[in-house]
Length: 250
Image (cartoon, rainbow, N blue to C red):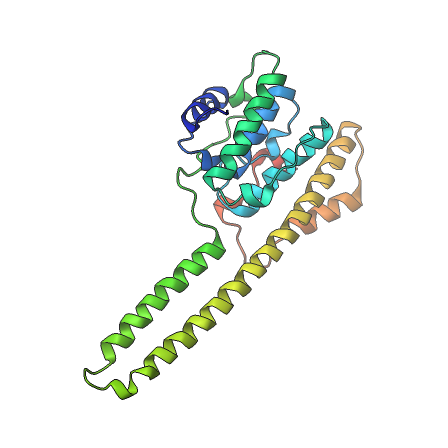
């Protein structure tokens, strides 16, 4: 019923003037935000990270999308937890829906995608890197295999009586690695949860300061909150990839 992946990517690349090669790239959230901007023209594109590469950045983009849906009373649940995993099927289904929504609601007005995002880079990786929990599980699997090969290499031929000891050791290591992987996945979900809350606070503070600046006013409390949000530990330097975009600074 819906368009194919090839048709959707051709439409998306033409509309947004990007160079996506896979539907999975839409899982970063940036493209969905700008598609809605082409319809309504009021998406705060300065807060959308079009070249997002980390899950917490994907979540921040989807927060913007959720706000737009609420503002325009778009009655469609956004399966954020599925989409940010950058799986093809989940993003294909959502992109098919958003294309139908665009067909129904786009007014045919001219749209300048590059101008709206102020020339911000859109170099979302063609192959989305596995998220940390998956990486942990993959590393664990590699360690399991390496441990098994190592144990097999050390076991002397003909000494079958003691062959169960290396196997038991490997199984114990596998159990520990599974537990650590599960624990790490929980910690990362908790990190993303609190990051999303801080991001919401940051957006609210930014919006309030913009209103005050337009009225030639100031709020010391808001400035103090902003300083706390942007402060870093002594001796810590924010890496270039994680720096705040120029259009978002104050």
